[in-house]
Length: 439
Ligand code: SUG
Image (tube, rainbow, N blue to C red; front, side, top):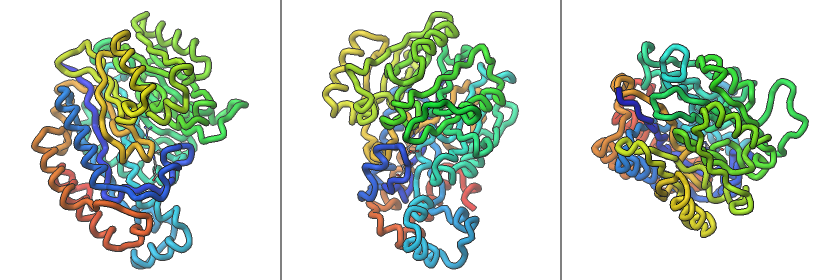
């Protein structure tokens, strides 16, 4: 049986815009109100998926969710024609209007937490859709994400789908979960990183939101049947959260036995690393980046740790870091990466342009949901969501003709944007054989 890591990438939607919605995410705040480029955003994502295919990876695609999310407004008691509702919101609550237009479903590292078959008690691949309850615009994603995952991973002999946790247990999905293993088919070790405890909260809290609760991570581990002996929990350092590390994948990434992490990621970091190494039976390779070389601020502005660490299917020993272009632009980061490639377990670095997503705090790793799968499990995937060149060509052509070139904040008042976004989305769902989800 051949087992690989499949990265499913979220596609930016036709209403991708910069609204400064995500409190604690410095890029989102810094981009608030600037012109966005939805077509370019989606084409950058397609370009990223093409690079992954070139590197010999198996690549999946998750479609954008329908926006504006009028169903949410109707649950808030807004009634009447959509034009009138949009006008009312523009006057009374522009932030709510922006929230229902947000294309944040593109950051699918927050869609769910995934446990591959070798780690779960029943040998199935487990998914828990994240409730994303810490930010209003992101909480709108959970219901559609669950329906999407049930459609793409439908076969209950191979896949187990868990409902989002109760919202009080704030859960942000795979962005706060790292799996370490030997080969992908071996039993792995799960590192869950949380920001705060719900029950008996820690005395020292960051000023910016600590999104993930320990209790959410524990609930996921329990319901997926992870062995407690193979599960490690770490708390984010409050200073890291305050420097803009709103998810752990902004400061840490792991693949197979390699962990690439900043020295100020966790509380009691040395103890956590020792425990991980013991659980990995001494096979852990950790690259711990000193703050004296890369400060927390620089880690956040360059998104060095939000790269994807990948092992191409043909070369099972390589560790390639797929980093955002911003890391090449930062001379300190670029120089440090050069040095790592010659002196560490890191084999190579590839730079990618995902600038539209980056301006909202979404680097390469935010845009993907990893699912370790055997060939058999891949063959059970529903819909047409495993990428090849021809599928990417078809999507690209559709995006080029149907996505708006740019959006300014006032464009959210234009009813034509609503109609155009719907047509654009219907085409994407049709191409991916997911029309049944577009009701
Ligand atoms: O939740 N940005 C997203 C970025 C998510 C990145 N994901 C990971 N680190 N895995 C967020 O903060 C910005 C939307 C806006 O401001 O328009 C936003 O939602």
